[in-house]
Length: 478
Image 1 (cartoon, helix red, strand yellow):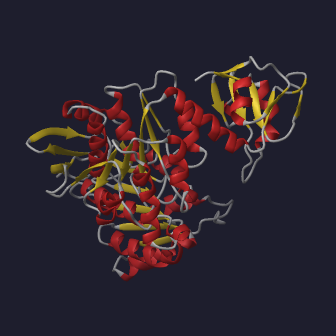
Image 2 (tube, one colour; image 1 turned 90 degrees about the vertical axis):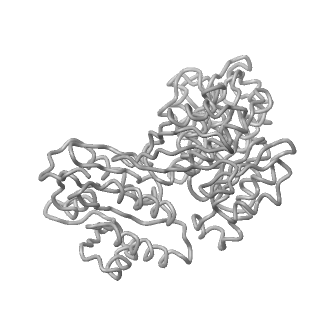
Image 3 (cartoon, helix red, strand yellow; image 1 turned 30 degrees about the vertical axis):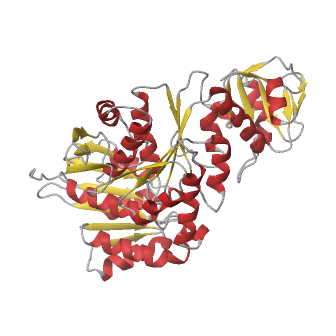
């Protein structure tokens, strides 16, 4: 959506320093390396870099101006500017996003939960797009920066906005809802993700409930009937409530779930006496629950079951989330974007079902972050789950050592721990080199799961595994 630098200054409560108030910006940019002509570059402080150090680069790339907290002398523009000076660029970005949300006035669907937010967002984005001009969050843009960027990605004619709403503490979802103002709210589940920040399950329930409480009368809360904590949020809703799940009591449910050779589920979507067959393009048994959440929200948007079916079957997943690559007879599952106990259990269940007769399941698992006092116990439990289905386990990083301990205690002998830092080995071996060596020879019929929290950086290993390479042996299909 286009706005002038004068608009930006007025909405952000700032002042224009250099440049013209009539200059038009057509897009928000927070990374100077991706700046293109017409962008408004927002200079944000970060853990490793300060955006103010890159204002000149953005302006040289053609940015229409920059939103800054302090004057920045630049060559571009002939000295100072074009700049909009504000006290806090991130707070200013939120104010601009609130204005855009009001002007465009779409139907907003917000999604939260301990796991499944991004996949549900991807699925709902595809469902809504069957009938409406839709903008959905990119990847996992779900925090105080990602949400306003999602809002600001809308154009004047956007009809539906799908926002993913994350939280690392109490009140954060409420704050996001204050200006996003969702009419439809989806809660996927409650688990121990971010337990370290919240300190208790009850605190996590309260945080996720903030979305339900924010919904207006006439809105719709979409709640997971298979999760008692989520289902209990109905009591705090002013909005209408619909439920989804695998059990017979859900308003929208799934029957006859099957996985194909690449782990992609098919099922019957059931509402009352109506049924529609659905075949998903994304892998994972747990994606059925995410698909049901998206389907229920789609019905709340006014779509028919036929339209919902078409949207679900067209949906593609985000990178590094149960991303399946088949190289000859080898299957690599890149689920390295994030990890928590629930998603790890789901990934292991799916990958075990994908192994053909004569094949093996191998797993490279890393640290699960933000579990607080539950860290050791949850890693050990994950190791025991892996031992039940995995033939060879490679654990990356000392903090994930509990996975190895749990697996060995459960009786798995083929366990190797790879240090997270580079491993000296002659000229020096990378973590990826060492992990690949620990996996041993890969052969046709093998399924390799790579999963960890994002901080582990295992997506590089997954990419190398997925690259074309010869594999030995042969496994019979079953």
